[in-house]
Image 1: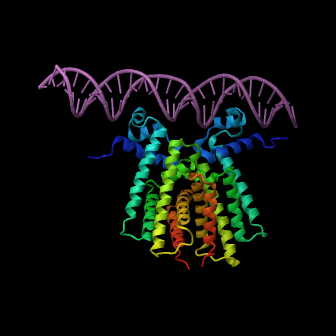
Image 2 (image 1 turned 90 degrees about the vertical axis):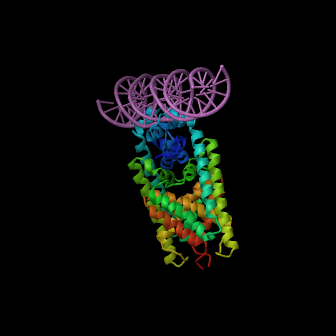
Image 3 (image 1 turned 60 degrees about the vertical axis):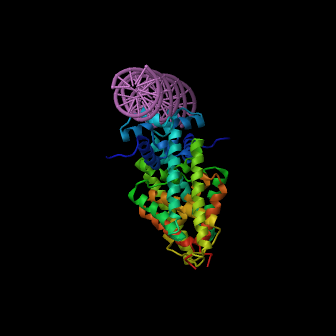
Length: 195
Length: 195
DNA sequence: TTTTGGCTACCTACTAATAGGTAGATAGCA
DNA sequence: TGCTATCTACCTATTAGTAGGTAGCCAAAA
């Protein structure tokens, strides 16, 4: 009754945590093999090439993110609360060191040397996320729940950059709390509570 | 009369551009060897191990950054102009794809699997940068040149995260201009020109 | 002055380990 | 029967790193 997860799911889980820790070149089939007690060749059976593995991995990640973000957009919570919830998700991740970093943010740094099939998927995730943030900000604006100082697309980009930069800072300083500090202030500032 | 740069400087130059493109695990001695027309063993002569090479590289980067930031702090320019100049440096870098990314920001993402001697240097750079930004923001505040909504240390962290996150976004979207868009708005916002 | 010795920078040639990937066999299940 | 998942055993290329040699330079000793 223990592991309901299929082998390929387990492979993706391990690969994801390894990528989050060290990027595309920071893991090997041997690492995954050792981690889940299966031979390298068996991993190739599920994912013939590394580029394919990571492509599937990013697809899965994007699907999960989409579901997660969509569920936040329920009519239950206000746009401001949705942004808070989005941040809270990452806050707990970073605090508990579960994923502790966005896979796509990690891969984005390595864009230049990623296989094209992976790079395009990472790009797509950034577009989705920017789109979601934009729509939430626009909704809040139209409902007069908060005032924005700039166009919602621009504020969305600022917020996204702030989130990813804050992940980086939290890592660099080995201080999970720093993520929350930065992003909370950023949200407060963007929503124009000052004035 | 062409290359005044010593061999070891050339090695560091190439290594830096490779790290910026693909991180610590994204380059090898063979890559450098091919790039500057020297044998692998000769690189080991200058830098016995990879960890040592990258440590020296980060030291050099930190020294250059310190000089660069210190020169911005000259009494000639106002704190606001200093922040602008800092951003402008990266704007041209990213536009011209010269370094196009902060080495330390790149390495910060890989913190967890970096040799300790490298990781500590990356941490130190983040501390320096946060310190510099804090002091510039504090100076502007004390001279009543602009109003901050938060403590200067916090705003410094926000700005730093914004800069690094904007680098990531510029890469992800393959849009150098996005960096400037994000950081300009961020600076404007932090300095409280709104209100 | 010539010679000697040491130093630096580079070389060829090598190593052991690891990388991603393949071929082909086996065992169980539909 | 054929399919899926796994295995053992292998391959080639690349990894970081080493051993040992050579050519040039510079300074001190003869």
